[in-house]
Image: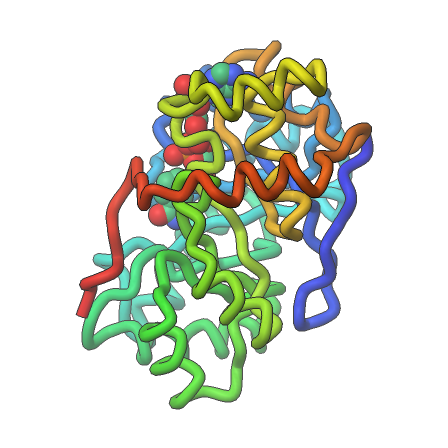
Length: 272
Ligand code: NAD
């Protein structure tokens, strides 16, 4: 199934669905998941230096025979590599491991205090060098974004944050929308922990869809990019069947009302 794109603030297109590979083991497990995703029609993969599976992602992309230009590839700068010069080296190392000339999106994985502004300057250089087509951030709160926008004219193309109906960060979502920063949802399936919630199950039954598809579709209808993770072929396929149905306004409202600040990952709220 063809995935629609969003257009980023730099004019580049980003597929609204990608495969996440956090906690996907290096080696065969990652390679196979990426191949299944590409076979299922995904054209967007989200990895990170710290996931230790960039080489396997790169191998799978090459094995697929799909032209590099047709795949949107994201990786992330790890905390230990923050700093203007360190960023340049870390990016080169990621590109080497991936076996590619550029990534479509490079993200600051976490807003490390005292380093993040310098790192952003490094990102500006990487854009100039065309090693990175789009620069973005991850786990940035409104406060971190305000600081960044106050010190640089380069507006992040993307902010990747944990986001689901159970962690509906409406204020941050609206803030990003207003400034043309595309929101990207990690943990869009709550790592599977809320799939049996009765309200989600009821909508899934009515629509003859699965709970996972309902959560992903909710984000898509809010114009948020999703990167669900799975290593199982049938789930990878299931998670891609999102563009032949839509949730009704009332169903969206029900899901909007499920927020309970539920997190599966780290909480950047108090990150200095
Ligand atoms: P997720 O919400 O995508 O949940 C994945 C889990 O949900 C799977 O391991 C599986 O247990 C279950 N699952 C997947 N498909 C299913 C289906 N169809 N039916 C039932 N269960 C299903 O969680 P995630 O992996 O934490 O997030 C997705 C991606 O976001 C990651 O792989 C990674 O690429 C990215 N991420 C980024 C950060 C960051 O700090 N930037 C943090 C966490 C994750």
